[in-house]
Amino acid sequence: MADCVFCKVVAGEIPAAIVKRTDRLLAFRDINPQAPAHMLVIPTQHVASLEQVGDGALLGEMVLFARELARAAGIAERGYRVVINTNPDGGQTVYHLHLHVLGGRSLTWPPG
Ligand code: 5GP
Ligand code: ZN
Image (cartoon, rainbow, N blue to C red; front, side, top):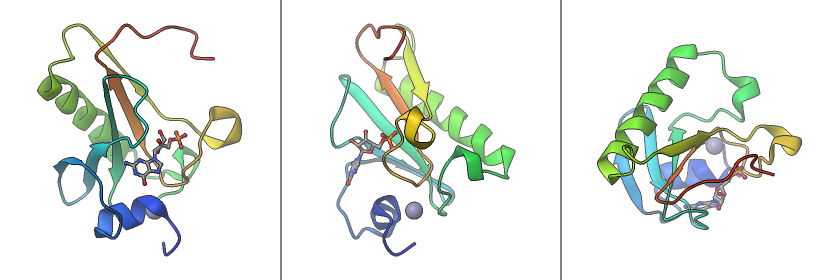
């Protein structure tokens, strides 16, 4: 997708702090972190939002990928949060499916 910021990250056209990469998934640090650890997991193929996902296996891979990242970052034991903001009321601002992995501090609930 030509105008998609995360497709540009996948293509290397926008620099990002890449954490982990496979053929299907990419993880990188959020540019505006909301916690000491804040990473994003995205599919390398463009999907606009959770509402557009047809491939349940892809979502499963993304969640397990997030768990791997949390373990590797050393935040898994104390705890972390995995979030998919979806559409305007969900707080989605970038319309390329992404999963937030947040941790490294005690997170409050409800999120707001
Ligand atoms: P959303 O609000 O759509 O759930 O989350 C989008 C996230 O992408 C935000 O947390 C925002 O900080 C992050 N973000 C937006 N543009 C960029 C970028 O160019 N690079 C990186 N690393 N993160 C970005
Ligand atoms: Zn995209």
